[in-house]
Structures are given as structure tokens and as C-alpha cells.
Amino acid sequence: MSMRLYLDSAPLIYLIEDVTPYAESLTKRLSAPNVEQVCSDLTRMECRVKPLRDGEIALLTAFDTYFADIISDFVPLFISCYCGSGYCATGAVWL
Image (cartoon, rainbow, N blue to C red; front, side):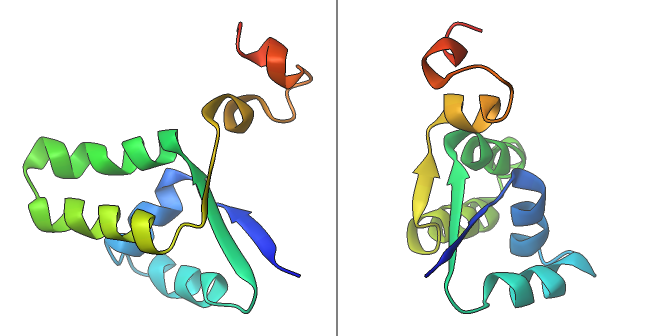
């Protein structure tokens, strides 16, 4: 049985940009057996802002590669934003 870990932008940025001391602990946690990494399209967009703004093609490519090769699923945006808010999924679209 796998464990799905939802990743927000900050841990992914720390991981891809190899920010000490966070990257090492993230790598250890994410490489554990049966871990399935998921994120939202919002997370993907947030991670791409700085490389796009600064013209850092190598960093942008690193993020894009990570999302294409490692992330196993993308959670629909409205579910990731409103999960646990007390609103039903269909009602969350109207907020």
C-alpha cells in the first residue's frame, strides 16, 4: 500500500534548489518505500514563477522534469484549495 504525500511549493523549491538543511530531509522522506508524490497545478505554477521571471532555464527545466518524471498525480485545484474547509467539492467552485 502506498502513501500519497501532497507537496506544496515550498518543499519542492527547497528540494529542487537544494536548500540546506531542508533538501536532505526531504530527499530522505520522499525516497521512502511506497511514497507517491502528488501536487496541484497551483503548486506547479508557483514553482515556475521565479525561474520564468529570472530567465533561469536550467532551473525551470529541473522543475518541469521533476513534475513530469516524479509526481504521480495532480490534485484538481479546487479540491486542494478547499479540502477540509467544510464546503463540498461542488460548492467550492463557487467560492
